[in-house]
Amino acid sequence: MPVTVLLVDDEPLVRAGLRAVLEAQPDIEVVGEAADGAAVIPLVRRLRPDVVAMDVRMPLMDGIEATRAVLRMVDGPPRILVVTTFENDEYVYEALRAGADGFLLKRARPAEIVHAVRLVAEGESLLFPASVRRLAAEYGDGGGNRAARDTLERARLTEREAEVLRLMARGLSNAEIAARLVVGTETVKSHVSGVLAKLGARDRTQAVITAYESGFVAPG
Amino acid sequence: MPVTVLLVDDEPLVRAGLRAVLEAQPDIEVVGEAADGAAVIPLVRRLRPDVVAMDVRMPLMDGIEATRAVLRMVDGPPRILVVTTFENDEYVYEALRAGADGFLLKRARPAEIVHAVRLVAEGESLLFPASVRRLAAEYGDGGGNRAARDTLERARLTEREAEVLRLMARGLSNAEIAARLVVGTETVKSHVSGVLAKLGARDRTQAVITAYESGFVAPG
DNA sequence: GATCGTCTCCCCCGTGCGGGGGAGGTCCGT
DNA sequence: ACGGACCTCCCCCGCACGGGGGAGACGATC
Image (cartoon, rainbow over the protein chains, first blue to last red):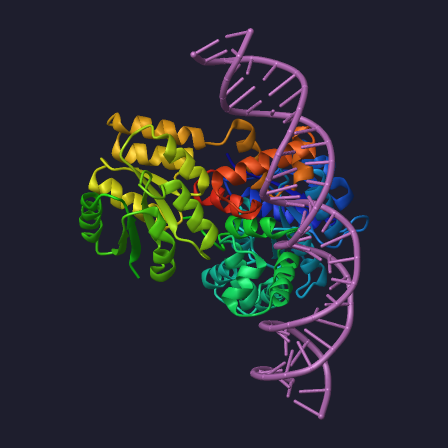
């Protein structure tokens, strides 16, 4: 069962490039293309791709809105990989907050592109330190990835937030976390809000789910 | 940091047996003993054991009441492993519903006893099919475990409750679950309450954690 | 026929939770 | 010296959540 991918980008050239790179892999199959975010919903419903490679900036509906729409409108939505031309793209961060699972610079090397698709297809989130570190270790730091990682930095949890999330994932209430960390409950609420916002979670339960699904905490 | 255990049984012989078996393990330490449930609370408060091996039938206060008392009266209560002589013991089921984390037949082999203590110490619940299956697979089914498993069956989630838990573990709210299952929100609340009670969870977040930790749902 | 478990729905009620603000402190890099 | 993260704490507010009851309908079991 190959990983199925839907390409969404207003530039045909980019779509062709992504298609060439991805189709070179035996375990990846491009099942469709779209030139604008507005066309994504019906395509996702029909093609049921595992991953949507979504450009951020598009004429009618941008990648942020399209990401929100897919996650809101589709049952069992695909993983969404945000694609961007510019480093330090504000919109990328917005898309990640909207629920996208990873991001990708268009100038990335083919191996990086393939790797990113496989990662999100496996359910890996690219929001967490562990993932970032792995990417950095795997590809080294040629200098080109720095800006990309900087973007991610902004989505990353602070140390305190990570600590709070770990305790959330152990089932502690805000009051219990406060007692554990010897701070006020208002402080904990503040950190929890930060975690929810950065993870795109509506409540602590969703945050804990994300923690498990991303490997931030492991069962057992 | 060894697993610390408090033994609660009215028969000194049983206590000695459990102590011998458990102390043979380098990572398990018996920190105290009690001859009746009525003595448990202060001992738990003072010794702070990780696990309480609790007999069900005792003269003054039985294991069910003692379990309830510990969970109600002590902050950060220990894991409670219910110990019983008889298979098909009605009281075991009551204790599990009262919040105990696992059960153990006195005739179990040493390896099983040690395994059960380690399991509950790790936070594993023994309420779930996955765990039961794992135990059964690990030790085979000598026929003696059948009655015990039957007891566990009664603590198992109903089909509907399991369905609700799966949706909870996907981050859905009660209203969303109601819409998905085409029932009223009150109905969902009812099932959620059932899940929480059977899992000994305080809120949906803890229930979802248990679902992950027990293998009821898997990440990815 | 009676009993039991399950699923369904309803009531009241308290509160933990999360959103929306703001604000003062430290530390660090510039 | 200044901005910018980060951590800390505070306010108000609405609501989903969870506990405590109860109750009717259905099917299976006895």
